[in-house]
Picture 1 (cartoon, rainbow, N blue to C red):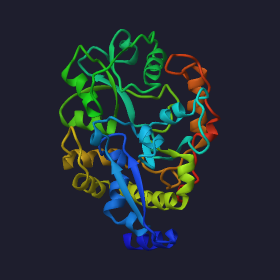
Picture 2: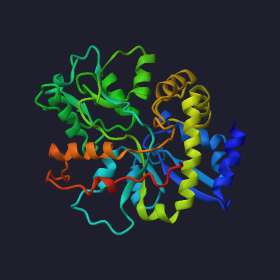
Picture 3: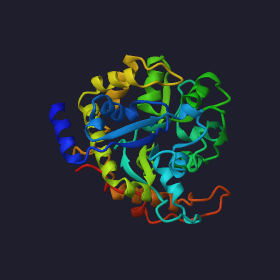
Picture 4: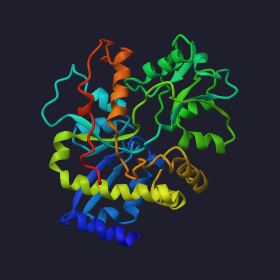
Length: 337
């Protein structure tokens, strides 16, 4: 099967001139990224003349976010939540032509993140977070979304933001190791949730069901740079799609590839943990049409509209600002049919 896929990718790619595409990861490698590692290990990028560099945030101790790497031209693409795209496109900013940051693919189709607390920590539902400490990643809309989740459950939304001084998995560990200081944080259930489960730690899980939450994570890039490498981007995403398709159909094989090829700072990538994580995610990778990366306009419209209706689109000083039309925030044009 992969022989036929490689032949098709070579046919679709046309010229075999090698192009390098750098992808800035949002986290040290995990199962959200598994399709990239599968595609690279299986030679799918080589087949279309693409050299892919996957940059872990641990490489510079999280000094530069994927957004910054993309904006500064240090990476062609970055992985981020859809909130990052919205944040890049608020109307108080002047953006030069071609510099607009947009989303070009959704890594996951379904919502897999949640707010969690320890089962025995005294916070059993979102409204119990009033007066409690939330360990923050300092995302622009993060605390507003958490507080709206609390209000939707009947609370006041009076959650305290605390900064653990950690990154990635270290933030999750703060609620495990420093109870009373930190009561809750935001996690990906097929990753930290699996780690907790295999460690015998019981969690309360507060889903995003009360909020029309957007795609997360997404692949982002600068519009002008994407256009300049248009053919290479299409070849890259076509090969990546096949990597995620394999992860969807054979999560055990994909997990083994991730364990073998990716270094992860903060937790050992044990085969059992990664295999279970990949199995939990396998139904989230592909759109019902069978395509990877596809984004629906309605989901962007609902999330942006919700943020605006709640008055949550503000600059860092708290002043209300607008968002550029939601249709301009994403594009499916680079995806493989």
